[in-house]
Image 1 (cartoon, rainbow, N blue to C red):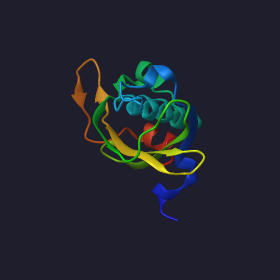
Image 2: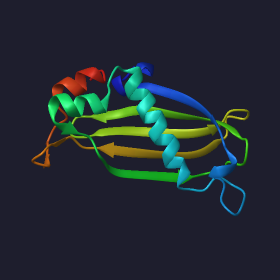
Image 3: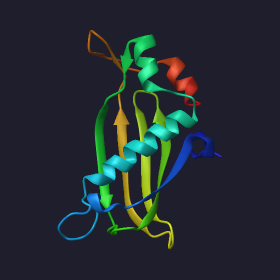
Image 4: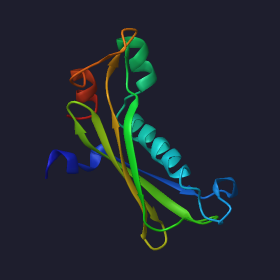
Length: 141
């Protein structure tokens, strides 16, 4: 098994589409998918014992999202139950996480995407050329 396929580097979170997430076409508004990516990313980091807020205070590194993408495949509707899965794919020069959103009942793909985070040293706002070793180790790399 390749390191990035290790199930310990993934997390799944189950959600139900609330009415407030719908757009005028009665499907989940496209921008809300990123919200579920973000919640699941945080759950993944917490599962691995990593709190980026604490890391920021202790090490003076922050980890902003520098790139994100999404492909919408099938719309989610009011009260649909779905699973968002996050998997760490890379953690050398940036933290790359792949996401999938699937309907719980049918396992049908609704969306897939990716996010990239860089390590920035503060207060200098200097982009680091490598994710710090203590972060890489916390994430199992």
